[in-house]
Amino acid sequence: MARVALVTGGTRGIGAAISVALKEAGYSVAANYAGNDEAAAAFTEETGIKAYKWSVADYDACKEGAAQVEADLGPVEVLVNNAGITRDAMFHRMTPEQWREVIDTNLNGVFNMTHPVWPGMRERKFGRVITISSINGQKGQAGQANYSAAKSGDLGFTKALAQEGARAGITVNAICPGYIATEMVKKIDEKVLNEKIIPQIPVGRLGEPEEIARCVVFLASDDAGFISGSTLSANGAQFFV
Ligand code: NDP
Image 1 (tube, rainbow, N blue to C red):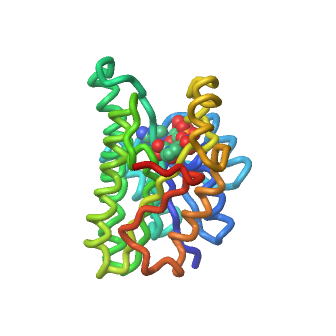
Image 2: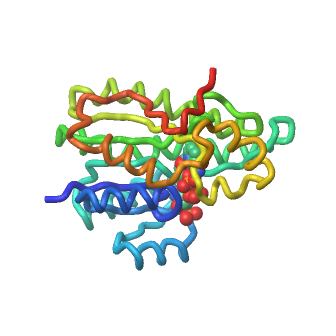
């Protein structure tokens, strides 16, 4: 029987590449999304992967969504917490709403989605929880106090939960991508991207979503059973202190 993987934000960008790579690796994949029905329908049409709509910011919706996926495909054995948003602003201009939206999706969303599938993973003595954090959670980024706080929180979550899951055969890991060519990065002003961001990436280019997807496939595999509580940086040698 194919293992079941649930990918949040799995119909666009990095998440779409993860969904496809997991399907190609033999998993039965469910791709969650928040609101972009058109993109989700096109994704399902193209890949044959079923899309499920709910917000990871809503705990009850996550519980119901996970139950629906399990009813359709079987127990979730691999959870990829990928859904994420940006609401960038310098802190003196950041509104409480911008702060809350990002924390609710990028940090609380990880709790909301992991919590309902965790007891089943413990019972079955197998699980993989892989959270897509960010280089900006590792180093902090001006204009992203909300995003950096959430993504940094994801790393603490990962390290703590890895210890709790260890005896139950569950690994919990995070991936910190650098700048990847998706809609999220296309929102950045082109001049800032070309003159400030890309020159700081030693390999001289943005990453591709598939390059992150391959990291996920590895961390989900049996081969990665001894890797837990770790942070895999995939950022084109963008070192920071
Ligand atoms: P995109 O904006 O391209 O796609 C985001 C996906 O997340 C979409 O499928 C979107 O759904 C979904 N989503 C957003 N909010 C919610 C929500 N509340 N509930 C469920 N799904 C939601 O983002 P990327 O592919 O660029 O980013 C994916 C992840 O990687 C994010 O966590 C991001 O922070 C992280 N990351 C990205 C980097 C980059 O350079 N792109 C760098 C480092 C980290 P819908 O289609 O319905 O809008």
